[in-house]
Picture (tube, rainbow, N blue to C red):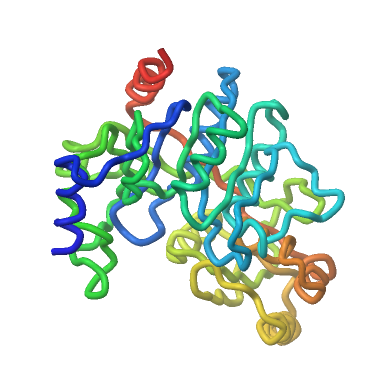
Length: 330
């Protein structure tokens, strides 16, 4: 009832949405975690920066410990170690790392607890061409030119706390663009979902990378896997698909901050299984690398650790997205 009433207040103009000078794109979902919002944001930012648009990405930086707004250029190299999960969170730092090779003057990461405040700050101070709000579907305080919602093949049925829905699935009707992410399953979607979606996307594996930022072949190696993400089954599916030899897969909660005890446990597992190394997700490697805590950074540097780097690719409907971006930028 609360969700219904809030949306109606916005629909009827009782609650007002703030309009900015910059064009605003929201990328979100109706369920809690695991649909691929951040990889889609990365792909979208790449497309716009390649078109020479100045892009600011807005994120909450989930589980960060600092409340105020933090800003980083996407090209920032972190020589002074100012980037850490305490200030930025894991997904924003992953975006900074992945987008760092693009035009250094064409991208910003802006992190803050309130997306409306972060967006207004970025709009007033930096005047970007486009603001992309990561996880913005429910943040209706901000008027957006393009509202993108992402679904997957396993959408839940019930609202929290009975299920994982943030709002009823029917509310996707207010989106301008409905995206189906089939994850690692390619163009696999039910007829019902295909009928309501504009784009079909999936993940593609770029490779397994080490601390040297180079791609490594892990075939034949005896690995221990661990992850703390919203959809650990997709990581498990990827490893099986790539024929990675695993002695064990250890899962933690989404955005898990690794403790000394966690790292001691992982170290023991490696010795017990005579493993060649660890394999994890890029988001987990970011939390180890940029935690600002000596024990986790030492673990990252001292052990053979590899991460799976994935990208989002569009299987169907790319021209629909391109048309909407072109219309938005006129």
